[in-house]
Structure formats: structure tokens, C-alpha cells
Amino acid sequence: MATGCAAAAPRIPLRLPEIGLSTTPTDFDRTDEQRVPLWADPEPDFAQLREKYGALVPVELAPGVPATLVIGYRVALSILNDPERFPADPRAWEPTVPPECPVLPQLRYLPNASRSAGFEHARLREVLVAALDEVDLHAVHTVVERTAVPLINGFAAEGAADLVARYAGPLVFAVINALLGCPPEISARAAAGLADLLGGTEIERGGQVFQEALDSLVQAKRQRPGADVTSGLLRHGAALNDEELLNQLYLLYGIGTEPVQALIVNALRLVLTDDRFDATLGGALSTRDALDRVLFHDPPPPNKIVSYPRQPVLIGNTWLAANRPVVISLTGCNRDPEIAGDHTGNRAHLAWSAGPHACPARSLAYLIAQTAVDQLLDALPELELAVPEDELRRQTGPLYRTIAELPVTFPPAPPLPPR
Image 1 (tube, rainbow, N blue to C red):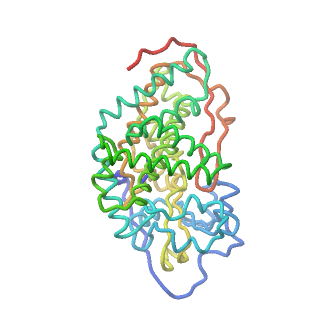
Image 2: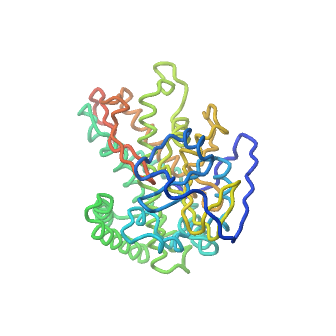
Image 3: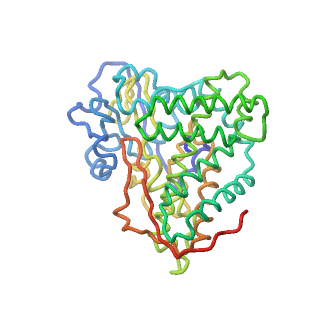
């Protein structure tokens, strides 16, 4: 769930690069003709890019939409801890791209903690953190277990399943709805709206249905508050208007569904393909180790931390233009040779971001993912991939990369008792 507690301190001494500031007109970084089309190759060869460009790579997020991709660990940390020069508010950038820009819906301004800056960010984040701090993690563990069991029972006797569609996806959505205190009728409407939104065919209709569902949730919690995150937002966010409240819920759905689903799926893929996690073969690594290795090497989503310098900024010998997206490549930074080595037990990755925008739900995301993986492996210990790993179908874009299907086989098993 990626906007959190600050990432763990790196285990290597770091000298942050000097960042200069100038308002003098300059030829910024590279010409547009030299830009790497990230829209055409969302998973480039980072070693090759590092050799050619260093820590800052000139890219296009879409045709004619320039940006800078950060693939240097130290540089990324310096940017993440410098919100005054690198604010997350995209409103000065938005007018520079056409309305039909394909990445605009993913990056446009919303009045929530992840896409705001300065006082506005601090005000919105304070409410979000206060509501999340009230979450009982022991209760969440129970919710995940109770959600996992009927999902597993739904395919345990079949001997095969797609773990994205039949396990990770519905589990995460159900758990997030439980955390938000969303009743079944409203949850069903929200699911329908999200399906249209993510399907890409009925985006406008899906957005309307989803917003109406969240409106209903807010009204229901105003009338009957409970021990849930939505009620916490209402308690701590008395000064927030309706649009701001709704957008905190949008943010929680956004950081709590697809990224956590991808974390679960990527961890399962790793456990099923790496003998170090197979206890029957002497493997000694745990589910938590699998999660951390995923967050280092295959973080979900890989390119969603974006800032927009308000003035030209000099990093090393490279100028970054004002109001042009600066995208932190989590995968590229985590693969920086400067932090190369065995990352087992090391949580110095940038998957939770760092600085003022670090993810406030890190512990919650770990708990949901670890419990989901452990429940499935305990119930079906002989899981195997149904296809070679390199044949797994992925969905990719300039800002995201996910496994679309995780087909597995296993000996049919009897249903688990309810929790």
C-alpha cells in the first residue's frame, strides 16, 4: 500500500548528491529525439540505461510526453526527501499534455495525500495516518483468514486455479472493504464500478458508479459510525470537505487493492519457483523474506512515485526541467549496483517510498500479504505453476507491471473448516 512509515535505513553509507537550483534558461537534460519510449518498453535494460545515462534517464511516458526516470538509489532518496523542490502536485504539469494523454488519468491531480504538496499534503496526510493508526492489526489478521478460507474452498477440490482471479484479487478487495466498513450492497456497487474503470471500456460509467458507491459509504458511516477506517476519516477529518473525504477513500482503494494484490501474486510466484522457499528441499527462507525480495526486485507498481519540480533543478551535471514529471523507478533504483548483494532480511528498498510521502500503511500491507500467502500454502502445500514461469502473462504500461494470471495445479483437497 504504497504512500507509509519511512523505509528502513539503508545498510550502506550513503552520500546524497548535491542538488542545485537555477532559474537561468538552459538546454534541459537531453533532446526529445534521444528519449527512451517507456510506453513501448516498460521494463527496459536498467544496466544498459545506467551505463548510457547514469542515474537520470530521459524518457517518454507516452508519445510526446517527456519525463525523467530516476534509476539511481541515492538520487531517488535525495528527491524523495526534498518535497519543496520536488512536490507531488501535478497541476502545473497537466496543462502541458493533451486531454487524451493516456497517462493523464493515472497522474492527474486529486485532493488526496499522495497527489498534493506543502500544507495541503500535511493536512490530508494527518487525517489519513490518524485513521490508519486506529486499525487493529490482530483483527485484520483474522479478517484475512476468514476471507481466505471460503475462497480456497471454492477451488480446492478442482486441482487447478488462477490465483489472480480466484484468490488474490477477490481476497484483497474483500479485506479492504472490511477495513473501510463497507457493507455488502455498497461493496458490490463499488466492485462493479471498479471493474468498468479497470476494464477500460466503460471508464466514465465506472467512475460514476464507483463514486456513487463511496458517497453512499460516507453517508452510511455518518449515520452509523463504527470501528473502521471510513469512520476514522470522518472523526479526524471534520475540516475536510466531501470531495476531500471521497478522495481519501479513492486513495485507500487505490493503494490497498492492485498493489497489494500484485505483492501477493509476485510473492506466490517467487515461492513456487525458488527452491530457497521450499521447506521440503531444505529451503530456509520465509514468506516475509519472499515479500521483501519481491519489494526489492519486482515491486508493485514499479513507476508510480512521481514529482514535478516547480523550477529547473540541477542534479549532478543534469538539469531537470520545471513542471516535467520526475518518475522514481523502484525497480531501477533497487537494482542499483551501489546496493547490490544479498537482500535477504534487508528492507532498505524504496517500494514504500521514503520521506514525507512514505507509505503510512506499510505494516498493514505486509500483514495482509503475508497472511494471504501463508493461508494458501498451508491449505495447499503442493501448489505448482501450471505453466513455465517465462510464459506467465503480464499486463504492462509505463507506470505499472503486473502478472495478469497465475495458473497453478495441486492435488485436490477437502474443504477447510470455517474460521
